[in-house]
Each structure stands twice: as structure tokens, then as C-alpha cells.
Length: 433
Image (cartoon, rainbow, N blue to C red; front, side, top):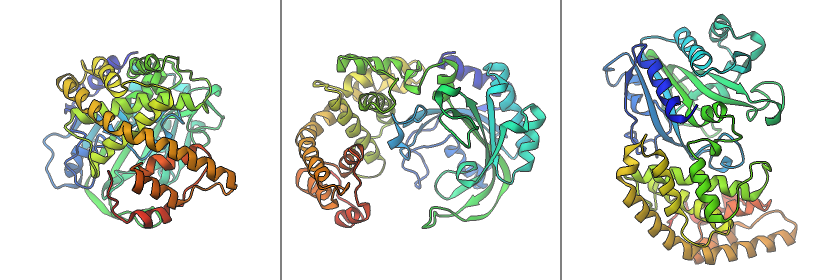
């Protein structure tokens, strides 16, 4: 099943069950606590908190999302994406757990024709009710696992609505990893759909990484997210998300530019990683530019600039000598433009901006890559397995080479960097260029 039909099947299912179809919000969120839209519920945050009265009790959407928290996993796993489309259904005090679970099971098994025997479920560690409801729709207890807050308690990552969640995962088979369910191997048992039972309000992140739950929401709600990329990979029976119809044309463009084919077989092959980073980032860059975000030094603008620079570095690693991002983003526009008209509308601007940013950074990249590789070779000969923070700082301060790219190159070579020392050298608010 190709992505247009995956989208329409989802939306038809929920609109026929009384859900209002809501357009995707922009990747530049109205919430100042977020740099980019990272979930389908972002635009509904005031509704969940009770700050705004919902205009309807049920909604469904296909939301454009960008998440950079997993940026280092791109190319390292088969399932992570920087940009992705989140299929979602939402309830604002209307229905809760039992209906949500029944909807999810019916849609996956009867409309997407996924085998019930390959579905595994995770629930929050003390959520007896959710486990009972999954058993009621037909999932045996042997394929339901209880996990802690890290895996099964969801929030936006900032203060706001939160709650326990139940995730639907799909067993891709022994060639993808170990037996034992999602608690054992998240590559084999890939998470497809997260069902969040909104009931609480979280506070600021604490030093240890956790957060306090401040109280209850004025009414319970439902927020779900089904990743289009991951479902497409399963339904199209391909190895990773870059091989789906969503990204395969862009990957083919990268192969043409590099003059050689991509091979998904060796998961440790640095060329495979570079192909996947390049393909993934090109899509994210095109969508961010189409939503009016421009490369810059701070905030959301720096998110975009960082993606552009990472993509260029991996493109040059593949030996691509000519323009990279222009042809790649053009393939994104051609492939996904029919589903996202803003891409078609902004196509000339996307090409112009990527070309200018590429020309500007190429000079820094050419000079800096040589110096970074020299510093890495010197560090490897010392046997300390660490690239000095002072070296990272000097490469940035004297030559303009971004610290995050130096750190990434060091990690690829098996070296660490003292991030605390580096932050001290850079100061709390680095003057990024």
C-alpha cells in the first residue's frame, strides 16, 4: 500500500466515525516553548489544557513533524526520521481508553490488513485498565508488556499536557533482531502507533531528566500518533523508511549524484549511513523552507542550518562534487508535492535558498574537513580516545567549523569529547555562524 492510500485510509476511517478533519499546523509552532512542531497534538495544546474551548469533540489530522532529538540515530536505525508525517486522532473529553484501543486494533487489522499475530502492545507499568482492554479486543497477555515512564509516559518534552501511553508495535521478524518483544528489541518490534491517554499536566524538566506532574487536566483526552513512514515500511515490506515510496525517489537522486548504488545490507557501512542521512535531511529541509523557516544562527533557524550542514557533509563524504541539495530537494517537491501543495508553491525559493546556503558553507566545509581529520588522526595516535575540547573550540573559533559536526566526526572515529569543557569554552550562548 502506497503512502497516499495509507493517508486516505486513516482519514476516511476516523472522519466516518465523527472526527473533524483538521489541516496540519505549520512546522513553526505557535507554542514558544517549542522550536519546531514535533507532534500532532501541538496545535491542540490549549484545548487539552482547558485554555480554549474545543470547537468539536473529535479530530483527525496528518501533521508535519520535525524531531532532532534522534538526529544521531538517522541512518543508524531503520525507523528514525527527522521529518515525518504523524497520522493522529484526538478526543477532547469525548471518548477515552476503550474506544481508542478498539479503533486502533480495527484499523490496523481490518483496513491495513496487518496480521494480529504480529502485533505486540506495551502499556504503562501500572495501567491495568489498558491491558484488560487490549485483551478484550483479542491481544493475548503474552504479547502485552509493561514498561516504565521512559517508554510509556508521554509528554511534548516541555511543560504541558501529558499522560500514560500504550504503544502498538509490529514484529518484523527474526532478520531484524532478537526475540522477546519490544522490551527487548525496538528494531525488530518497531513502534507504529502511540496512544496517549491525556490526563495530567507536567512541569519543567528537572536536572536528572525527569519532570514533576503538577495536577490533572480539566478533562481527559486522547492524542494518538501513527507514523506514516514506519507503517509504509511495514506495508511495503522494505528494509527501512528511506526505501518507501515517500523517500525512494530522493534516495535514487542521491545514488545518481554519488555515481553508485545504496546498499541497505551492511548496517555499519558509513556510505549507507551517509546515503540515509542525505535522503532524510533533504526532505526535512524542503518542508522547513516551504513553511517559511530560513537558515540562521538561533532557534528554529539554526535547526534548519544544522540539517543543511549535516546533509552537505554527508554528501561530500559520498564523493559528490557538484550541487547536492538543489537536486535532492527538487526530488522531494516532485514526489510529495501532490500531497503537500506548499512544496510546489515554494519550489523555486527552496532551490534558490539551498543553493546559496550550500555555496556559502562549502568553503567552510572544504577547509574544515581537512583540519578535523588531521586533529582526529592526531588524537587517535595518543591512545586517549578523546578529541580535546580545546581542539573543537579552535576549529570553530578560528576556522568557523561547527562544533556539532566536529563532534559527530570524532564519534564516528570512536572518539569522545568533553562536552562540559567545550560548553565552558563556547559560553552558554555561543555565537554560531
